Amino acid sequence: MKMLNEDYYNGSQSVQYQGVFQWNEYKLMIELDIDSVSRQSSATISVFNKQDLDWNHLDSIHYSKMESVEGVFAYRKVEQLQHKEIQALKKDIETLKRKAKQILL
Image (cartoon, rainbow, N blue to C red):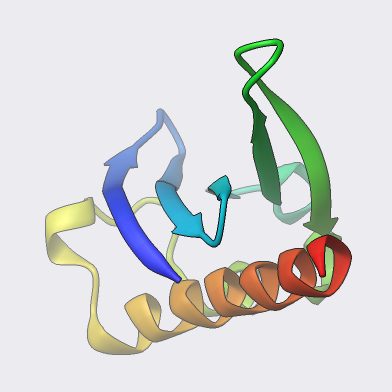
């Protein structure tokens, strides 16, 4: 899966991630939002619909199953994320990629 764009940023009380990937003929967008209130966190993957020129929800990870909810300090500035926090985010990203491949095969 080829990464086309990736960005980490801070919300008012969260760490957020957005990445766009190319897999075969599909464009996929992964969005993670790690909030200071765990149940408000989210991890989703969407597929781009060329006909509608819109992103359609494909799958998600429940907040209680997200590695990054436990592994990332939500108030930390993105530029100060520690290695273990980035690894937690990457685990969720890989989980969403795997789910997308299973669905789109």
